[in-house]
Image (cartoon, rainbow, N blue to C red; front, side, top):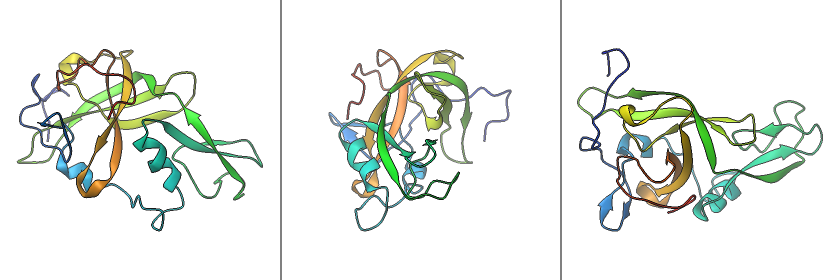
Amino acid sequence: MNRGGGRGGGRDGGGRRGGGRRGGRRCDIPEMLDELMPPQEKEGTAIYRFFEELRRGRLVTTRCKACGSLLWHPRAVCPACLSKDLEWERLPTTGTVYAFTTVGQRGKPPITVSLVELEGTSIRLFTPIEASYEELSIGSKVSMCVRKVRGGGVRYVFRPEGGKGTTGRKGRRGER
């Protein structure tokens, strides 16, 4: 765990391990996060469409038709009015870093995580970010990318726009 004034991680990713591969290189998503992923199969979750859209590089959530609430995370029931009458709504895949830090476990490399405010919305996502602490600042523009995780699932992560994260790759929004 980082105890030194909020700074941590190396500029090169320091041996981070991930569950997926792209172009023969490991992702920067630590395996410890893979185990936190919910079921993604159609039979295993009422929000299957979220993962289906994520595989296509799109970020979606649900909106309640009864009260109009935009829900994050996607839900099967609106927590505001308990309605099950929900519709899917597409969200932007770009945003701004609202806050960030590094976290870790003893014996494992630290990772950078961020609170990202999605462009044009009031939604703030807590997410891994593919950049070192030193590469970020409050207000940094970031884009979503999709990564495969162990077991065939997917997850979203963000990285600085232009692909200037610890991966060293340049890419497009929603890239897999």
